Length: 383
Image 1 (cartoon, rainbow, N blue to C red):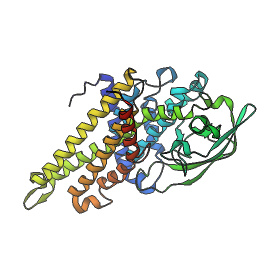
Image 2 (image 1 turned 90 degrees about the vertical axis):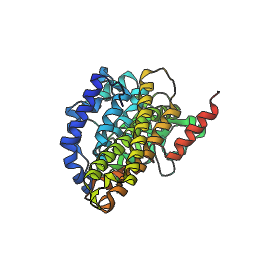
Image 3 (image 1 turned 120 degrees about the vertical axis):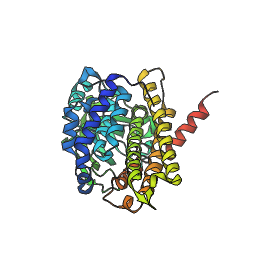
């Protein structure tokens, strides 16, 4: 379908596609099997200015908005979502600064992120606080011009590799949801260390680490917004970042469909290609239809966010994230089925795509949480 993309947007897609085909495709098996962080690929992103796709031009970025981010991530994830994830996770970690940071904070951090010199990470999840943000136990106690942070974060993408971390902690536990605040931390700060690296089912090229804070001293200038605004900042961040997860899922699904159609056209059974069988044709038709529906929903959301005409997009972001991620799972499972025994082999890229797709239904809010978000917003809405 023609989504009336601008020439600049088409150039972004072409740039991302070139990196995906020429650089990422050659290395994806290696990074997946060795679980090595893809610094080599990240340097390619930096050379093409993709690290700053969402960062405002004022701070060295491309100012391409959510739509630009979505187009880039979709294209990269057609080939390898694991190696593309450090870019997506950096945007997630950067969003609190872009949305609520001071001019001083933006100037200090965004230039290096946009250039690809620094990666960022988003530190919210804990052992007992995943879907329930208010359950975080990490604390930040004010002491003169500093905050003393203690606690642990878990399942943090880019953990240990990023230089900049946006961390959520309770500055006033008695206030519950209104007692959470957001801070900028830097790798190397005294009292800030890293725990175990997770061994994961999919997205193995990305680093997922525990963050440990032991009397970590952070200056008050590193507080994003005001004390108690952490939950608001987190929600606004997720509204803007969930389209990125949806784009990852959409890219995985599209890549899987492309591989499957090629395979079906050359695989011979009973003297003919399996693409000639009605059962296979129907599966391919359903896969293609759901992918195009997911793309239409996601692109519409991205345009809406970039227009600035709609103040809150929590419901719509949840819809896009939910639908695209579940389509990715359905498509990749069916792709493995069509590939048959080969699809179950580690030699086949489809097997990796199915493993990678699963996380999109979990991180940045599970499918069940997305449904809660959608329903709650519907109930509040007046028709």
